[in-house]
Image (cartoon, rainbow, N blue to C red; front, side, top):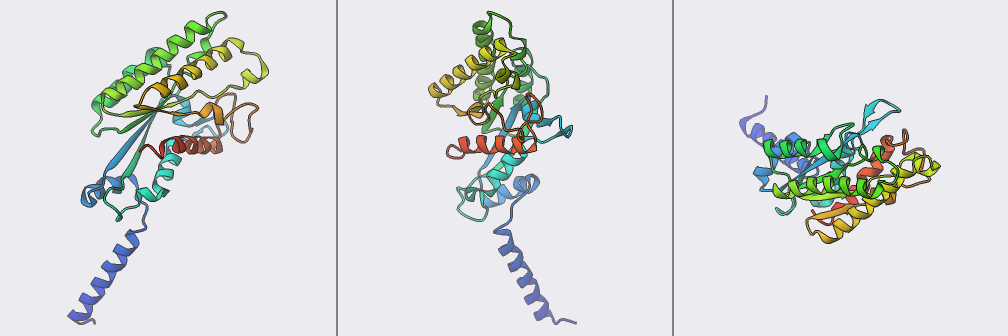
Length: 252
């Protein structure tokens, strides 16, 4: 049996070991919520909003591999997110709100508005990747009007996010396989015009940064990264997360 003194010393030793180990721990989302107030840490909450490319759909496995999961890991592994360091170091929470099949022009705004209105937390950043389901309806000789209409819908998503105090990340729309084969010229023209408008928009707006996915996931495509003509594999969504993280890391 331990004496009272030995028991106290053992208890203090266990506490010291636990605290030392906690210095290097990576915290899950639930722990972040509870630890942040105790450590006087800023919490940077990030909402990933969009369609199936945000939800992480992959036809190869019929499972979801959202880029938000890897994006969370990227922020957690960054030295600036380490706990028990300088009090100015933030903790990051990445949430996913991807809805497969959703269009930017007539479906996304009400959903994003509702998410932001009813959220019990305030988001610091909203990452927006949208328009992929709109451009598939592009028709001959309407690329200019179609691209402007879709771009206008995207701008509304950014503006409502700014209204709720969040900055935004505009993710350019990646290529489809049919654009390489030349079987969807109307879609290709509309798609290219939207990305040009997005790049110009981000260059003129201090509350928006660009994650140029289309410039990094390009044609001819690496088959390891794509599960079908539009969606990525798990490896592709991982690369997508790294592209978005690289665009954000010096701004958050």
